[in-house]
Length: 398
Image (cartoon, rainbow, N blue to C red):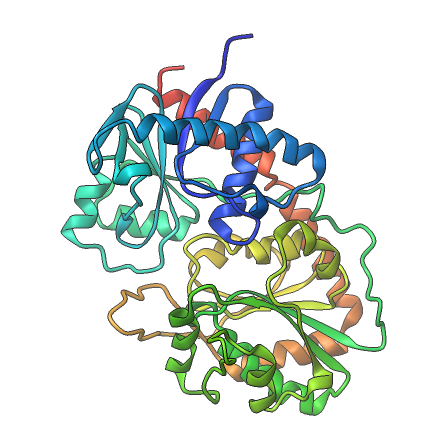
């Protein structure tokens, strides 16, 4: 067997945010395949890698490789571009921007690729100049690909995220409190995620169905993003505690959801959330925009939990043959100076209608969840990582 080819991944792995989960699963699957050896070029802490003991031991070798790369790069001039003789994959965000590596260095390669999840559709000349650096740009949704190609980018393809089916599966579904109707909502608190819509709709729904419970796994690492939820003006403003962190419980109470009708879980590591998801009756995602396909929604579907999805942007890759309840009435969105082509504002009345349907049609709900789980079987991290690996090896001539 030939030795694996080193490949730089220019972002931080972690179990507590989307890019981090992407990095962990991509790296572990590449490591097991043996074709590519992933090396992260952003410092990370093993304390934020929440895995079972076997996988954690596997990941430790990747941490050592990152430490060694840091040692080597710190010996090079700061703030310069460095050309490496093996593949480099950058994480790209709005404007196709990436982060520098150790010592403020930009890592380049003759085999340079970018993986992108963006929501801002305002693409400047600088963004296109950045795009031209890459031999290939891999988008996380067909919406992202269509936006780039519609603006003249040619070196674009889509590979969706995956799901770890050893963790996120539909076996042993069922609530530990079966006399309550549990509605799940997860993700970081920000305007585009639409938690303000969740709160408004659920506050009205719970008046009709007082046995309903909103289960939130929201977190807010960036206070300014959470504060932008106030932009819609449909709820009372976000509440903060004395340390400046969002106080989800107080915010929900102030917006008409009684304490007995919600559970605030806070930030739950990715490998620990599945058992909670499998106890839900329903999950709600009225997101205004998703550059990817919404990993949390994918994981809910893989667990056989029926989901309410907004019919816009990256979510459209998940909608197929009655595998979800889709929010079809999408209005245009205005959001500061951000480009919002393709974004959608879900309507409160339609969200409530879907919640009522779900509550009163439990048998239909189970069948929707079953179809969602079947749909998600094609999107394992193993398969998706292999597809990305194939592209990187083809670019490098292997």
